[in-house]
Image 1 (cartoon, one colour):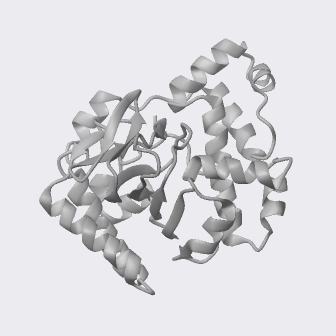
Image 2: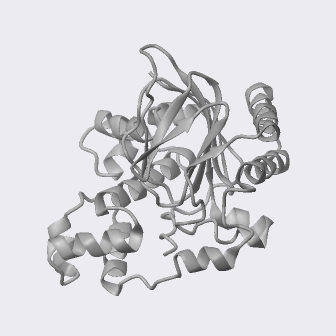
Length: 295
């Protein structure tokens, strides 16, 4: 079974040191996502339908709302230690204005990038700090995290050339019928996804609704609904005292075991493990759904 060594959560997003022994289902995040190998066997992700290797010399970059999956193509019994960064685009924009487009669907033009010797050194120092430090101050973690992010994406993102980035995929207004559907989905993340009902309320056929939704969000309605549900689960696990069973019920799962399986399929660990391991770097906030895709 996969395990979480450390998880830090704050306004920067999430930083997780994960000991992985199994694949994860295809999913997405509203964060921009950086994955670095911290130890163990070489492994891989599937991004944009292609294999993105995770090795000492290769990192994986995943854009916000980009569908991906951890494939874990290693020998039976072998494990991979992964440093997973789930970065809030708004936090990056606060630190450096040129990173305001980190939520853009083409911010990372490629999913597999080379890890330089300098980046490898920063990664090792970052992992050691997370692993051994009993406490890491928010300012210290944010500085280390920002330095690591810049080291990784320096030559592999659109942060220095916003004009070219916007030309590659100019902003397009989301279809108002899809906005309406997303609003309905956000209003009750625990409700079972009913594609026929959403399509009917939008005045579209099921096929047309599906095509428009994927065009405007980059993911299917089911993947989008799962993102909302997963982030709502994280919020309830970290910012309320509700039992795992109560969280499962609030999110529409018929049994806690189904909720645990859903959570493990998306992160590799159970909800109880997440609550036990996570370190919070900010006071509780009101329940809020993740931001919509930047199209």
